[in-house]
Each structure stands twice: as C-alpha cells, then as structure tokens.
Length: 487
Image (tube, rainbow, N blue to C red; front, side, top):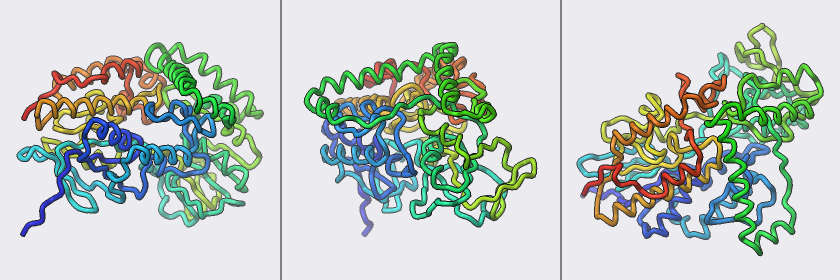
C-alpha cells in the first residue's frame, strides 16, 4: 500500500523574522494548517546564523522590531545579535507558533504541479504537498567567498564571518581580514586588541557614518513600559529619519553632500594619519553601496598592529598571502568578511509552472511583482523578493507590508472559494518597467561603484526605488484585478 504524502494548506520556507511574522498573522486570520520549514535547528534566520563578535543591527531597536510586538526593554539603542534572537524567540513563543516550525528541515526541491494545482515539496526530512508556498528566506544567511587562487592550499585557520569559529583563539595571531563590508566593520574592532597583527585587505573603502550607540537607561525602559505611546513616537521619529535616506537614493544625488560631509568629518576626527585617511576615503557616492554606521571601526584601523592593504591579492599560499606586486605577507589566520550570496539557494529550488527556477529568472533579470509574488509561479508568495527591499528603511517595515498583502491575498482567495492565484505577466512587466525607469538615475546605479545593489550589467538588483510609505500604500490591500484567480 502506498504511503500517503503529508499535505498542508500553507508551507512557509524560513523561520526568520519574515516566517515568524507570517505565521502569526496567518493564524490571526484563521489559517492554522501551516508548516514552517527551517533548515537550522533554531529560529531567527540571519540572527541565528550570524554570531561573529560585535554582530548587531544597524537600525535602531525601536524600529527594528515588529510593530505589533513592541519591546520596551531593549538594552541598547542598537540591538545586538543575541538580544535580537531572544526577541524573535519571545514573540514566536507568545503568539504560539513554535509548534508550526519543523526544524532541521532543509528544502531540497519545490515544484508546481499544474495538474494537481499544488506544490510538491521535498525536504531532507521527507516530502509533502501544499496548496500555497511562501518563501521567507533571508538575504544574509549564505556565505560568499572570494575567487582567489590557492585558497584551498592555506594551512592555517580560515573561516567566514558567517561561520565564526568561537573555539579558535585569535590571541597573538597574525590575522588577514579579506573584505570591508558591514560584518567586517563590526568584527574588526572586536578582534583588533587581541591579535598580534591584523592586515585588512580592502578593495573599496566603505562610507562610515556615526552610529552613536549607547546603553538605554532604566528610567527610559520604565517610561516605555508605562507609556506605550512614547515607544510609538520614538519608532515614528526613527522611521522618518531613516526614510530621509531616500533623498540620496532615488530623489536627487545632490542630497548626498551633507551625508558625505558627515562621513568625511568622522574620518578626519577618528584617523590621525593623513595617508591612512586617503586610503579610507571612498571613491564613489554615498548610498551607491550600503553606508555603514560605526563609531569603532575607523579608530581600530588607526592602531599600530593594523595595516590596510589595497593592492590586489595574487594568490594564497599555505602560510601566506601574495600580493600582485609580489609582496608576500605571512599570516596564521584568514577571516573572510566578503558578505553573502546575492541569490539564496532556495531560489534555485523553487520551480514554477514552466519548469524554470526562481534563480534562473533572477539571473536573467531581477523580477517579481511588488517583491511579493512572481509570474509563472501560481499560489506562490515571498517576503523581500526583488524590488521588495528598501535601501532607506528597516527591513521589518517592508516585511510587514508584504505579510499584510499576502494574508489579504489568501483571505480573498478563501472568501471567493478559489484554488489558484497567479499575477498576470503584463502586470508584472509593467511593474518592472516602472522599477527600471525609476532606477535609471538613482545613486545605486550611477554612483560609481559595484556591489550587491547592482546586477552584473549595472542595473538595480532589486531595491524598491521609491518611498517605503508609498510601498506600504501599494501593498495595503490585495489587488485581485492584477491576478488570474480561478477555481
């Protein structure tokens, strides 16, 4: 006798901020037949995966939290990894969604079955089917390594910031750090006092602006507990301040000058050596790459045991790194601060109606409708899909907008008794044309740099080129006329 395959109404991939928020809001809307597939053994997404020293958020805690679950007890202005992870866990526990999570269940394949009008899903813990599939996979959970000759010959210790080896003692070691992204900016000041030598290999200098982090006082926390409106006012003020970065991103590049002046003043104040200051001065417009908030990175680079190297790496040898000019630098340890893959591996495993994966479509052209769904993928939704992330706002604000849209879509489908919903190709094409037009003169495209904000051919890789409050308006209600909805 054939074994029946488990079936669920809704399958969510990922138990990070998006997946947990979705489960909470879906349950509140009456959808309880759902499962969250999480490849790790704990929830939290990027905040479970990244544990390197100094790991913290670069959005103030009062804004980097669910609007429906304010936390008056943040210990710092900017939450650190462990505290953010505990916050996510507490919200999931309070809203009773833990029993929906299937831990250590990695998605291997998800294919749309046209005949059965459902998704067929394979995981390392077995197969299942689902009427609706939602991707809540994060963008910062899979390491990207540099393509350097000889990497596999290195005989010392080497690891990526995403896979930090906390059992390895860096004290007294000669350490090479490759990369100057947001992770490196956070962990370099933490390890600099411990190591004998730190050589930072910099391809391009990041824009560093003041962070002004601090511990919150007990009186502040008491006030927020007693007067919830105070928290809403603080959240609103931070939203407004961060939303203002859109002036640089997609309104007019001339708005960048005050921000660049702030970065240059920070550099002049914190780095004494004029030659080092020149090395650490970015050669592109602020906002073209992600600007980074830090009060400790630049002072760490000005210490006697640190050297910033801008010459390219020719090869890695068992006990050294060789530069293109032939100089050889002996090192004991290599730490890769080279960021994350731009296309999550799950995108390779989502295959739509025409047998094409989401990743194949993305490589051809970043595409979606509102960053929340994709033509050719019936009964499929996602959080932070292409053009569903903002360069000027908390990711949680965008995620909550997508959650509201998805829940309203599924509620509409349930109300009218439909079994299938798919965005019309012409609607998605019009949305992508709009994104291209609005992106053409943005600092992300014309700011003089390359990075994960741009595709290989220099286009916007998926940031929403408009105000996030305008995005909230567009996703406030499911626009059923933009979809093919059928029984």
